[in-house]
Image 1 (tube, rainbow, N blue to C red):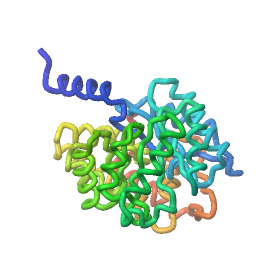
Image 2 (image 1 turned 90 degrees about the vertical axis):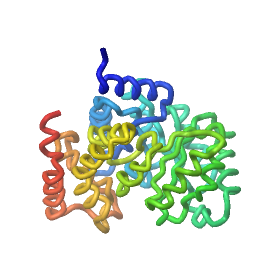
Image 3 (image 1 turned 180 degrees about the horizontal axis):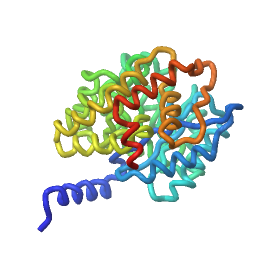
Image 4 (image 1 turned 135 degrees about the vertical axis):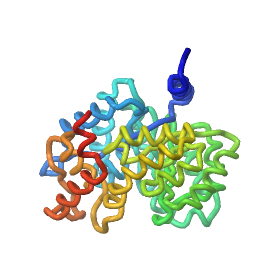
Length: 330
């Protein structure tokens, strides 16, 4: 006779098999050397570490966490190739694409497909600032043009409202109708807007995966339910805890989810609310302190570099959250 926990695990497994775009998708950071070149050795170490965590469904590279803004097209493609090689078909690889015009996106999507990525994460172009006030026609035409140009699944990126190029809830529902679109990383950063997105997507003509990805609002947004997982940089630093949080939401166990959130909060509060410091740099330095990455974080300009106060603060918050002790057990 199976107990309740065994039945739950079976249900989670069945859902994961039937919907591959479900679970935790860590947005990987990108280690680099002193000359700012890609540290391939440490990147491969990081990927292998994440692949060893139960509940990690895939990896997302070449996003904000992966310093994509600082990479050439060739470097982006190299990063994708490394992820695909290490994944070895065991988990999905989602490659971020971004740019200033449609041509940039199409070129990067072609590279991603040729390199074996399972999907692309389409960051909204900066020219879409104010698009939520202009209706769905322009974004729908843009995503359709990408889907027609390159045959590869698309994960939408619902940007933070502060960036100005987030989609309206109406637009999100229209975008979900496009056959190539399989999921959305919703990082809008406003609980009220996330709820509107959720209602619109649940009522859309096609059901796509909804990945709750607002770093500072994981608990309140996750508590609304109906989310399929997260595509998030925190998943690179604390994948075990992010899986635990996601599965607590799937069980509708808010007490368990709150307990995880209490551990996560000190890190989120510092890493995502410290002015002037790239949160991906915090994650890289923390991963070095925790013994995953072999080298300290090298921060690409124009972001400021760490000083000893920063490093002391990182050590303190890792201790406060319990991550330091937890990493000793894995």
